[in-house]
Image (cartoon, rainbow, N blue to C red):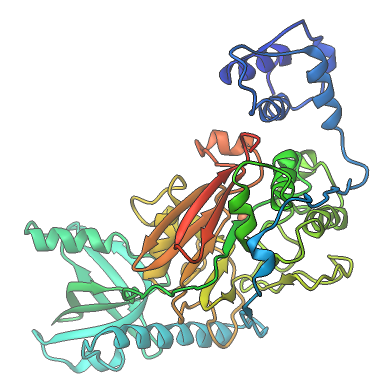
Length: 504
Ligand SMILES: [Fe+2]
């Protein structure tokens, strides 16, 4: 915390070209999170077009007041604009939902063995479907092979070791044994390319290796990921759209309530800008961290505007309740929500939602699937982005869509297990986190940064956040993109990103 809060406030405001008029007493700021105060003031003035952005002492005191802990959620009141005739209200909803099954096991070593065997079997089948590589049935079978024999094998990456000579040794495992795969650090272009490719290997993923037997090793000449084939675009006749949200973090002091309320007002036709876009929205997918939760990390209490978990969901549902009823909302949990952390996460319980029930509001597991007018949406909160970003060279939080492509290539939403940054999993008999069915749209959140791309015909979207930047994120050099709503026009196959951060 800075020694001089007034000075710090002035400094932070000036970064956004906001000047403080009048002098504020150091005492008035005692015990105040100045960075949070500044971000709230900046948020409140986002829409201002004044050449000189002057903030008065009265405004600061007003924001200071709003930072006090909310005693009870204040429901948002929205009335549908009388002259708003949304196309989506006239269009029949067509949806089917699929939860990811996760039968619980004891979590014993043998449960993990059968879980990973299931992963191996499924991804091996996906690799074989792509092309006939003549895969050897199992790793044990390679043991009797003569030197020089060409083989194609499949296994799970259990270790990556740099040898003294600078080569890379990969240990592949399957249900019968292991294989030591050498990637030579050669000078030819082909060798360099393969070595670079091998740098992308991550723990616990399943890959195929083409190579030659050499004593106890397989000398690799190619690595094959299951990947996805080019997918044909599904045509949708109805002129409707899907809005994607995640990481709303209701209950956090940094939840950008005004901006989020504006989305709800906009959906009700009460905001002029992009009203035609609002009128086409038939579906909203919320990919987790819908509330900030309680006890998620040490010291979180100081960051909470609503310290009670039930009150957090109550406030969230007051927003959801104000969404027009012709819009279907699909909501799944994330790592901040009050369900088990191990994935697949079950849907939010009716206990948490205080029996909130509406025909247009649907709760889903994480990951969860929903088919909308024939288009398959795979929604996953995205906790595994932490581990894949930390392990694959060239990935960063600035471009989550690239990390999402890496997950598609591996045909698994959460491949890394047992790494400090990895997600925990339920060791169910079957690995249900394998992406067996290729979605038309892959939606994630978690990293608080919007990103949109298309990979082999799959629309890839990260829907950012509705929470302002935290100290932690600033220290990490991570710049989130709060309050940007991606909306997918299903008929024309285009994304519109609507910025609610500027008071739209
Ligand atoms: Fe998250």
